[in-house]
Length: 493
Image 1: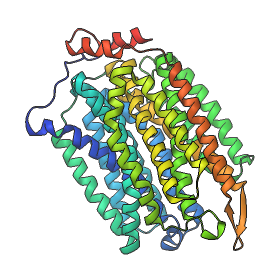
Image 2: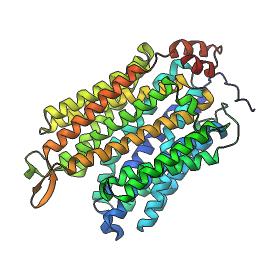
Image 3: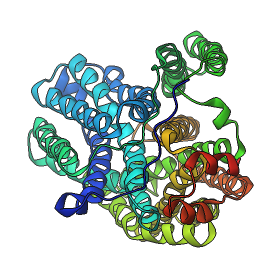
Image 4: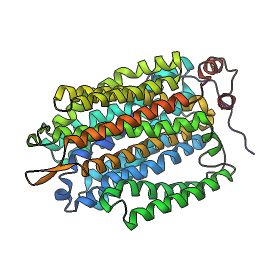
């Protein structure tokens, strides 16, 4: 059996390039989040602009969700095997190619294909976090990982108002030309500033496992994302869920009987790793409801009695303070994790998310309270999302960090998809006519906040159930080169 490559002492590339490694990786994470968000302001107008149906246009979002969910663990595993910088550059390149395709075409089929290519960028954050583990000394790793985790929220908060401004004052293709240029800068910057990691896990790539995971996830997420439109009890949705269960059960058996599996399920079954993945799913659910509900609530007509009738640009600006907060609070997350451990940080973050939803329930009529509540949720998300990769880094061998973090991001994606379906189901069942058009009631929004807050509390309890880690002791010893990360993972199990 081939042995994993030896774990080298973390070193930072000397000179100018080394100083730019963290900013360049963070730029890639922000760019990924911006790319996922920019299509949102276009959705109401895309049927007219592309001469297609609203159902077809919805696939510009669904395609990105499905491809991102499938490719994140796959590209993470490929990064562990073939080189993280190489795979990271390829993911950013696919994202950029997709953006160029969107800029050149108004055909809905081309746009859906392009958006599917852009889904590859979902692997940017787990790959970057793995690179940071390989390249940074322990004393710098925590703050860098926390910043990298926060880029998802920062990019989303920046992307929405930016896209809305471009769409409002320029041709919509201009937005994709802009993101294409930013993507080209990101690819070039990664190639220049980030050196290839020496940490590898050689072996044959698990093609059968990749196909099985892809089929199972597509069935699961397609059913979740389209359930509201097709009907939760329709034959198509029930058939997709049944197929997902069957395929993923067969995939689980195959992974346990493969020498080099795509996902090490024995590692996942350990409480420190498995509970971290469960917490990621719950946190993803709780976080995503904030963006979904806030955007709809503030844009609701004033005739509802609670809506503010804001434009999409004004809505994006309402969410912007949350993005700034995520940037400011990421160092705090690293300090709490260094002092108390990442599971405590995760528990605190999830509890803060619940507090934010309590504020939303208390007052969702005044704009300043809406912004305050959304910002508190964003603050809790920063703490939680920054702690999750640190938990994974301390619990898995160094040569499996990209694939393990890829699975963790996948669980967040499943949580977000489930949150979207749950929020839609709640709001659909709580509507009242305004001007002859059914509009969600304030009670429906408050119920969605309540569900998200309860899920956040469950996430906090799950975090506290994660066995205490030995990361701080391990990190100090790793800094002297005396502890192998594989032993650290086994010790933590």
